[in-house]
Length: 437
Image (cartoon, rainbow, N blue to C red):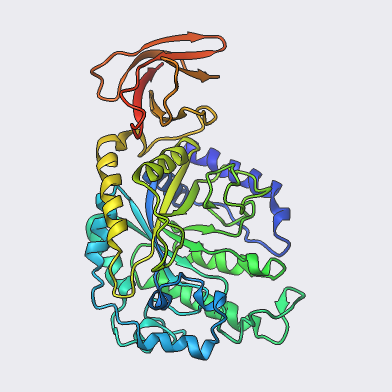
């Protein structure tokens, strides 16, 4: 409990220092013991599946197709008549995730197109009332996740391209869109969030997809976040707003980026917090199903992303965009099987570990669990050794991952040398074990 108390204190200090990132009233938030335990559990899981799925999959051009192709709302709504994913099988999805070594699933409950992928009493524009499918996929997924011990999270869009009360494109004055009923829209979101948190069992996280289209709006986070924590105190909150976290949030997200980097272009000026960290990334280029997207990332690239995220003390939320028939496309399934073969063998070096042992090196990174350091050599050096700078821990032994081969090492004031030979430059990740005092 002392550790939880310290984390609580650090959270309060951090948020008070960064409150200026959001100009409107914020929640009065002190994390509960259950909430802090959920954060630690989240950090231990390390690897999750992101699922972007909606009626946009019918067009096979990504989840932003309505906006990018400038499709009018009345026309776009016709997609509901074509969306009938008879091949959807929640248990198959969960098995694909579990076999890959993923410990949680985050799925889109409602995306920017306004369509709800669950049975909602707050709108008729949902999968039950507007399509022929007549099944609630989130309910089925919740049951399958519970059966297999996978944590279920819900993505929820703050933006809305269709509802009149949101007023997409309207000017913001005094925190509200002109000529739109902002109060009604906030009430609508609160009603749907209540449904998601009361009708689907235990939910690990509500994952908001940013307010970046309306940075000057009053999103009433003081009401929304408080509602979530009141309904489900152990449910975590993430918000992909591309800002330093604000009070009430439990996870800091990085879109297409590792913590502290800005290669994706969304994290400029964003400080890495003391909260649990998560990087979200795609297996190709698009989030939603895209028929022409062939820019598949290799198994090696994805494992490196997972390992580097862990080395920076973060999780990886890896996305799939299922097809309109309800199947996850076979290219993703095959790659995830290959990732699963790696996590089955080397998962010990990722799950339950913490990072930031050292800064990421050209050769790789280090994760830590109890009295063991896992050295991940992702890019073998030409020299017959690797150099670890600024390693504070005292090493007592160094071996191969399986413990069968001893590794020579030398700890000096300027750093540590590990003398190891790489089997091949094509090795995905050579993992060494260092026992420390």
